[in-house]
Image 1 (cartoon, protein in one colour):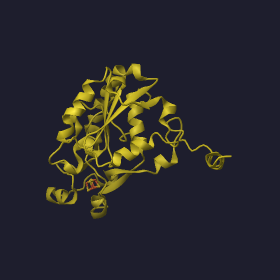
Image 2: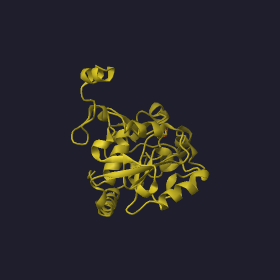
Image 3: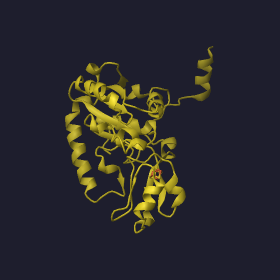
Image 4: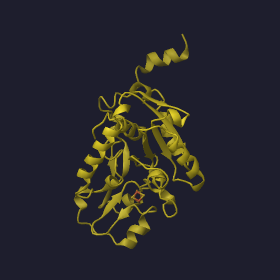
Length: 258
Ligand code: SF4
């Protein structure tokens, strides 16, 4: 009997049952910073917020909020002001992948929910043909390599995306989903745009990670990949967990309602 067969007998089935069932590992995941629920009236000076956060993710105009699309999980705000900031929990929650950029700002503005519902309905109608299976083309537009490890994990036995009808392809002509990592380096703008234009409709673009969403640490020079291609789904995190990327793919396929 081979060593792999012995491993299989010892470990049993390791593949997550998510999204059909909850997953303990996903629930325990530490996500981007949030403003604590009991800190709604907190005040932070703009200069202090700028000194604390290396990516400008903390907004202090009128109220304190965190733009999770900019958060790189450095932890400085949580360490300096634990009375105001905390870590979000869970890798499959409502903000693990969103269909509007604005939905990544927490606490959300009152109009966010209605806008998200409308955008999600439009996306579902556009991508109805993708319900059963999608092929993905991944483009690295200046990544530091962290997101690539998480994408690679999707193909392993724990996430096993093939079970959900998700496959990777090398050709834009065969791709339904464009998965983009990196802050949108100028040298990759042409290849990224050419890849997008080579894909057939309906095509869905997913920005994976804080760099792709907002430019991340390079946010003072680059604004993320939406400056190059139109983004449909935003996945925060630095890097985001495989569950977050998987959630974005299931939203693209119309298999998740939130
Ligand atoms: S964890 Fe770091 S990057 Fe995220 S909001 Fe706090 S200070 Fe900014």
